[in-house]
Amino acid sequence: MRREISEEEFLSFAHSYLSEAFPNPQRLGCPCDWDLIEMAERPNEAKRAAVSEHLTYCSPCFNRYMEILADLKHRMRHAHRQSPVCNFTLNDFIDF
Image 1: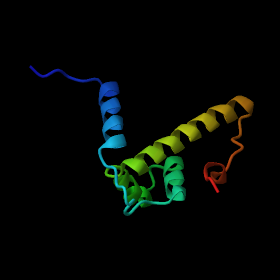
Image 2: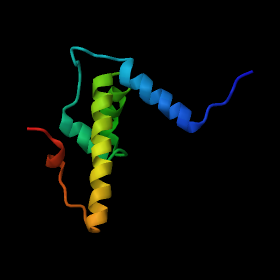
Image 3: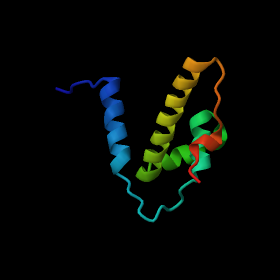
Image 4: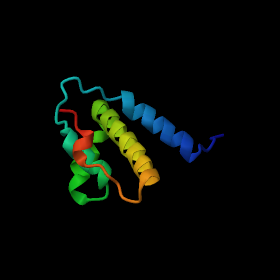
């Protein structure tokens, strides 16, 4: 008999799978950090479709995107505690 899995279990499996299953050592077709950052900030914009699709078959980009999301979430939480206005820019996410 098949056991139903919870949403949390599914998301955990998907994260684990996408993090490791597609190594892409030559980094073929990878978007730049700026594109990943913009997608993190505005994920529903249609122009992000190619980046979103790329994340489904490139583990390094998926992992970088997850780092960017975690950093954005942390910065937003921190900014909301300090003031109602977020005081960061996209440049805060880019390592020069």
